[in-house]
Amino acid sequence: MPKVALITGITGQDGAYLAEFLLNKGYTVHGIKRRSSSFNTARIDHLYKDPHERNVNFFMHYGDLTDSSNLIRIIQETQPDEIYNLAAQSHVQVSFETPEYTANSDGLGTLRLLEAIRILGLEKKTKFYQASTSELYGQVKEIPQKETTPFYPRSPYAAAKLYAYWITVNYREAYKIFACNGILFNHESPIRGETFVTRKITMAATKIKHGLQEKLYLGNLDAKRDWGFAKDYVEAMWLILQQENPDDYVIATGETHSVREFTELAFKEVGIDIIWKGKGSEEYGIDSSTGKVLVEIDPRYYRPTEVEILIGDPSKAKEKLGWKPKIKLEELVKIMIKADEKAVEQNHSFE
Ligand code: NDP
Ligand code: GDR
Image 1 (tube, rainbow, N blue to C red):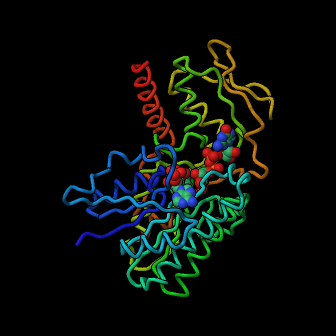
Image 2 (tube, helix red, strand yellow):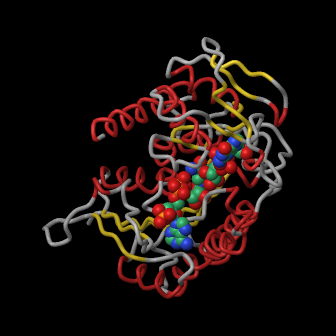
Image 3 (cartoon, rainbow, N blue to C red):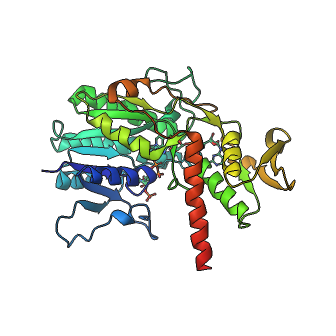
């Protein structure tokens, strides 16, 4: 019998890559998607199979992490060997505007899934992966950050994910559920949400090159992140659940770069050399050959509390999982720009 996986957040960046990865491994994959008034399945449409066909191994269920009865029913019906909890209100800045909802979906949502496993008596059968985050380190206490580095969340998102982290550890210890945290540092791709800074930058650089956008407005250029490639990271999620014992792992590249550096790389990739002038909120980026201002600061993108620097130490994952990142920043930027170029060209041909 093929293994059965249930993925929450299947319509997101990681959910889509993980679904593809598990289907390639021969899993039957069930995903939970939210009802929406507009289409929200663009990232997984290529995996869709008509449920009337034979040998279908990919199924979608309507659901929401804020609805326990719905989660219990889906888990009862699907009897998963592995649950990957990737669903979340995942935008840090938005969490300052919707803190209660973020706590409900990201914090309590994790508890609801773990309780469902317990209520259904699946403690011995169902393994559980929790999408934990480098945001837990927040105001960092150690560089680089590893599994033993103390947490100091700096946003409602991170505080909600802190609860989710610890409830996962607690259910592992209290009920012997094979429950694990992957503490993943930022990971990006051509299907990254368009309001996260990397994708916002690669799309803007591409559009500016093609004359489809005038300027890019950004917030804190000094923030530093350890950016990896999402496809590499979903493999780590799977590896974490294939070990003999449940445990928590940092997944990162071990390199850190500023938003300013990422911006320079993206513009360089489309053939524009950016030079920076001014300081703080007055800083701006110009095209060195034309002198045109292409990047400006909009303080609206500053966060009430910021995470200034993240850099992960993935040694444990390397040693125990045999995992290491294949794609580093320069190549990641190239992959993202190439995909955005293609999208711009395709849109053009429709105009
Ligand atoms: P996305 O924002 O791309 O995807 C989030 C997914 O969660 C979407 O499918 C979304 O549905 C779904 N979702 C949101 N709220 C609910 C809810 N209440 N009930 C059910 N589903 C919901 O995130 P990523 O794929 O980038 O990240 C996956 C997970 O990993 C998230 O939990 C995130 O917090 C965490 N994480 C991400 C990192 C990253 O760098 N990408 C790093 C570390 C952790 P819809 O499409 O309808 O909006
Ligand atoms: P992050 O990602 O908050 O690290 O959370 P994001 O790309 O939103 O921000 C990264 C850094 O860039 C700075 N920044 C801007 N950010 C956005 N979104 N838009 C801007 O215009 C901008 N200008 C500067 C931010 O201040 C920040 O310092 C992501 C999410 O995927 C989380 O779900 C996940 O847990 C963490 O990564 C690890």
